[in-house]
Every structure is written in C-alpha cells, then in structure tokens.
Length: 402
Image (cartoon, rainbow, N blue to C red; front, top):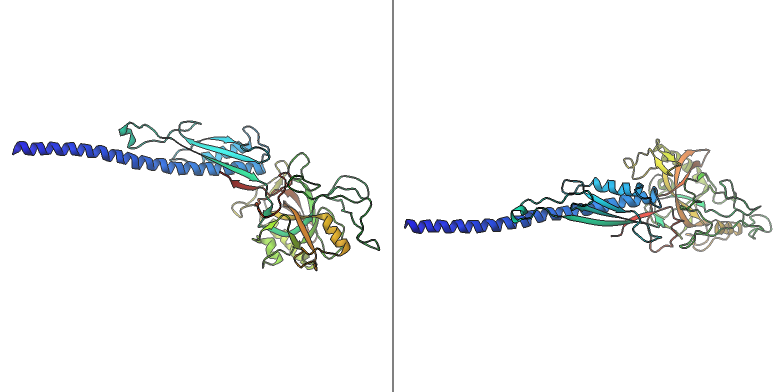
C-alpha cells in the first residue's frame, strides 16, 4: 500500500512538472506576445506622430530639407518623446522620401537594438531560451498641395499681375491693375497697353502669387483696405472685398470664427455690401487682441510668440483669405456684366477664387485697414476642385499616406 501511494505521488510530480512547462510556455506566449503587440502599436503611433511632425516642418520651416536640418530634427524629436514599452525608441528619418514634385517625410521607429534603440525585454520567454524580442514601425506623411479650407475669412484680394500700364515696371503694393477702361464711352474696352494677368493652374503659376522659389511672396507686406463692392476704386494688391460666404453665419461671425463650409479654388463667391466697414474694422482689432504677443518673424516667415495652441489651434491673427481673378473681375465691373456662375445668377457681383493665402495681421490703420504679411495657412485637398502647382499653393495639406 505504501509503495502504491509513493508511486502515485511520483506520477503527480511528473504531471505537475509537465503542466508547469506548458503553463510557462503559454505564459511566455500570452505575456511576451502581449508586450510585443502593445509595443508594436506604440511604435506605430510614434512613427505616425514623427512623420507628421517632419511633414509640418517641411511645409512651414524648411523646404527643401537639408541633411540634419529642421525636418529631421523635428521628426526624430517627436519620435523620441513617444516611448515604446517605457523607453525612447530609435529612429531613422528620410526627409525627402517621395520623388519630386511630391514632398514626403518617412520615419522608421525601432526597438530592435538598431539606431540607438534597445530590444524589447522578455518576461517568461527566457525560460524557453528567448532573450529579447524586436519591433519596428514605419510611417510616411506628405505635404500635399492644398486647394481649399473650411476657415476662410469673408475677405478676398486680387492676385498678382504683370504691371504694363502705363509703362512696364515691378509689381508693388502700390501698383494699380489697369486692363479695361471703366468710364466714359469706351467703358469695357481693353486698354493699350493693358496690365497682364494669367491665373495659376496645376502646371504653371501664371502671373499669380507664389509660395516657393527665389521670387516667392511669403512675407510680402500688404495693407488691406476695405473697398465698396459697388464702387469703382482702383484695384491695388491690398484691395479688400467683403464676401458673402455660404451658410447662416453673419459677416462678423465669419470674421471671429470658422465658417465651417468648404471654400475651394474655382468657386464663385458673391461680394457683400459697403455697410460692413465697421464690422471689418472691429474684426481686425478683435483678431489682433486675441493673440496680442504674437509677432511676425521675417527670417523664418512664421509667427512667433503666439498663444497657440493653448488659445487656439493656430494664432487667431493668422487668417485665410481668398485671392481672386483680377482680370475677370475688372472686365465684369467695367461692363457691369456679372457671370451666371455668381451665386445670384449674374444679377449680383462676385469674384472667382483662384488661390487662397494665409495672412498675418500685424496691426491696424484707418477704418477698414490692416497691415500684415502673406503667409502659409493649413489647408485641405478637395478632389472635386481645381488644383494648383506646388509653387502656387499657400495652404499645404499634411496627410499620412502610409
């Protein structure tokens, strides 16, 4: 009897030992695989955030990117602030990952012992001879050519033209667009010489404002001046027309906040009325007061010392403004013949949007006046709307592409 019981106890020990091996193996699979799975998600989050940071830096700070420059530093810095299983990962940044003209930033995030990283630990797997496990992730973000926004202010200014009347000369903030006779018996006829305007398109900048290259208009100083849409004042670069944006918001509400309606290149937008001068003056002052410490940096062509992102996603003083086809507008005005594409079916005045720019409000002047600088502004890509060349777009759209 005693021998039989002793044999049974021995069998139980063997069975327990086998069960423990199975349980350890199962624990190694469940726990260590869980660490691997969670770390893989964390690595992907880090890669996504780093790629977006690099693309933002490329859109606003450094384009084209330089080796070891702002784009690489921004992406690598963002990756390092997103731990993977309680440790900063290593990273590799390719700041120019797409063939031209696309602008992409790719980031590879590592917790595999490469690029300064350490492998992931194992908890139960060491019992089975496993000493470490590895994880990595990759993400690519693109600076796409934006052609729309949902936060347009109810303002439009004319696009850049070639100054030929009365004599050829440089296009200056004090220039006046003169292509059509607007008074007398010859009203509506083409002047000789006439200022020349060509709108931008996907393959060419035309004569319009450009955001890239040696002759770009980023940082161009302008004085916006409210104009009566029913008047015939000379058209200068700061000629500001009030717009009647779609939706139920009042004009003043569209100044203080985002309209929320998509405004895209190619749209025809009706102009509003001369009674909005005081609302424009008050709107300029209110936007500047919402971020009083913000300043324009002429070297980087960006906003410094802003309250954003605490007070708002971007500085309230950085606004999106429509740019309109100046030649068509003067032709319509000179002939008092507005196109059927106008929201009122041709019975009212309108502009055709050919571009959208950012504008930093630097200060105010007289009634309806504000000084500031041409800037970039976060944009969107509307696939149903006309596109622009990268050099013409001031509204970059940052997107993860893979």
